[in-house]
Each structure stands twice: as C-alpha cells, then as structure tokens.
Length: 476
Image 1 (tube, rainbow, N blue to C red):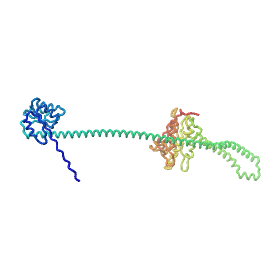
Image 2: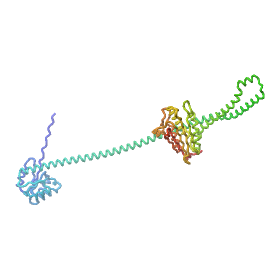
Image 3: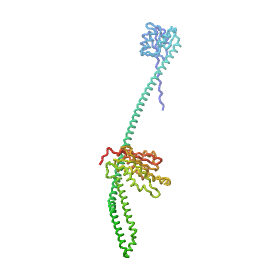
Image 4: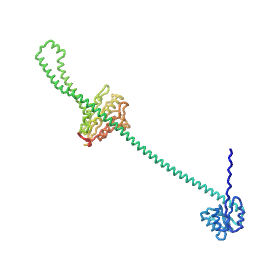
C-alpha cells in the first residue's frame, strides 16, 4: 500500500523594511534584494518607518542615518523603546564611516553598518547573515519556550509527585499508626483474655483444692479425734487389766493346765510388755494424723476468704508437710535438705490460702528441678537442698527467700517465667500457670513483688516481698 507524499509548504518570504529618504537608494536596495525569499517594505522618513514596523513587523530594518525630520539615530531609539518593535534587528546605512557614529549607532541597539555607496554583494551578504541570525534566534527562542514549558511541566509533575509521595507517606504513617494502635488493642485484649483465663483457672484450682483439702481434713479429723480420745482410756484400761493380771498371778500361782497352756500360747509376759508400747505407738500415729489434718486446714484456709492476720511460718511448715513425701528419701534419691532460717516476723495480714499456694508452687517447682538435676548428674557428690529465709525489712515489709541448688533457669527464660502458659518443663508436665498465678497473687492481691534470680553459686532464688498490712483489705 502506497501513501501519498505530503507536500512541504513553501516558506513565507522574510519582510525587510528599507527606510531611506532617497528614492535612488530605495531602488538600488530593492533591486539588490529582489529575491523570492524577501518581501520589501519601504518608508521615506522616521515617522513612516515606525508605522510600517508596527504594521508589518519585519524581520530586518535597513535604516538610513541622515533623514529629514527625525534622523536614523532617533528612529532607532524609538523603535527599541516600543514593545512591538524593540526586538527587530537594525542595520544602519550611512556615508558616515567615523568610529564615533558607529559606536553611537551600536549603543542605540543597531547590529551592523552598511556604508554608502552600496556594494550589492556586501548588502546582500549582510542582510542574509542577519536574517539567518534572526531566524536562528527565533528558532532558539521557540525552543527555549518549548524547553521552558517542558521544565515547567516537569516541575509541576515533580511537585505533584512530591505531593503524592508526601500524601502516600502520610497515609502510610496513618496506616502504621492504625496498625500499631490496633496491634496494641489486640495485644491488650489478648493479655486481658489470658489474665481472665488465669484468674478463672486460679479460682477453680483454689476452690477445688480448698474443698478437697477441707473435705479430706474433715473426714479424717472426726474418726481420728474419736480414736485419739479413746486411746487415753484404752491405755488406762489396759494398765488396769495388766495390773489385775499381775496381782492374780502373784496371789494365785496354781492354775489349771488349760489356763497354763493358754498363758504359754499367748506369751503373757511379752504381751504385758508390748501392749503398752503398741498403744503408745497408736497415740503417736494419731497425733501425727492430727498434725497432718491441721496442716491441711492451715494450707487450704478455705474459711478465710478475706485477709486475716496469720503466721507465715505456719503456712510454710504446712506446705512442707504436704510435700513431705517428695522431700524425704526415695530409692537412690536422698532426702532434700530443708534449711530454715526463720526471722522474727510479726503476724501478716494477707490471704493466707493464696500465699500458701505461692509457697506450694515455688517449692514444688524447686523439688522438680532438684529431681531433674539428680537424675542427670547423680547424688554421689551433690546433695539437693532448699533454703528458706524470712526477714523483716522494716516495720511495714517482710521478705521470704526460697533458694534451691538445682540447675537454675537461663536468663532469657527468667524474663518470661511469670508469663501465662510459659513453662520450662517438658510437654505434659506443666501448664505454665503456676508461676503466673503466683505472680498475680503477690503483686495484685498483696501489692508486693515476686522476683526470680540466679542463685550463687548455682540454682534459683525466688524472693517474695509483701507489706505487713494490706491497707485496703477488710478484716472479719
């Protein structure tokens, strides 16, 4: 397929204004510039030259210096001052070739001189050169305008882009702020949910444990008290019967063969000696059971739902008694040395059952750690130990130290040990709630502190600090 050729438009002729009062000079210059590329416009004086320049807007003016009326210098000055003609290049035509006149003309804005009498080739060459310069100048101006438009467009684009970037940055910041705020809200909601779960579990465990211990203590306490109370009478009755039997044997030495045979069968001498010991052992056993029941009641404190003044040492001792089966020796495992360094403490107003639960959680974890270390390194050159130290810091504060010589807890774990559901124990051996519940009991319920540190030279050191009196607690 062939496309028609696009015809190039013929360039418009360039307008040249000739200003001269001499018809001969005008004719000579018109003949010289009689070419298709030129359009000649003529003016006979300065006033007419100004009118023609404004009307035709020539690309070049050939201006005679000596003219009637206003001369060429004045005409040049007025052309350069007029806003419509100040840009038109002017070539002076004169017979005055002295340097002073040339300088004056150039200072007024002229670009060149043509000396009379005219030389065709010189005039044509100078005109063409100045018109080419004028054409190039116009092209340069046009390109400069296009370039300036492009620069303005780029600046506008850059400004819009900068505004868009700023708006985008502001939007991103708003989104980040909203995400951070929402993340904070979700984190707070998660913490509240976890704390609610911990509190519910804590209340359930406390209630279940307290009811279990109180129930066991109650069920054991009644028959044990009955047995313990009757042992005193049984011991007295036994002593009376043995005394009567002794008198009978002393005053009635002769017995029937059947009685003598029965006395030998039951070994009356051994029975008389061992029966009081047996009753005494039973009394010791019932005393032990009563102590355990009392420890269970002290530990549970189910009936003490409000803060009351209690002896912290009793709570620690009751906890140790409940854990006694794990503290004493078992198989190849030696007993755990319990070192008590009790200070002189006043009674503390607190929620005793909950404080005892804190003791239970920490001591139970300590025993777990000691057992784990014993299984790992053996007991040949190592003795498991728990040291319990209490002290009165001042008139308003007490401190309890629970220190074991187990494997210790790494520093990065110690920072998380009080977080809900965090545990260092293997899967299935811990819920991760014990220490979180303990921390909540000490810090929230008793306005105290619970810290975990590395023990020297090894092991774990828990420190509980609580006020002597809970100012906001209600006594009963």
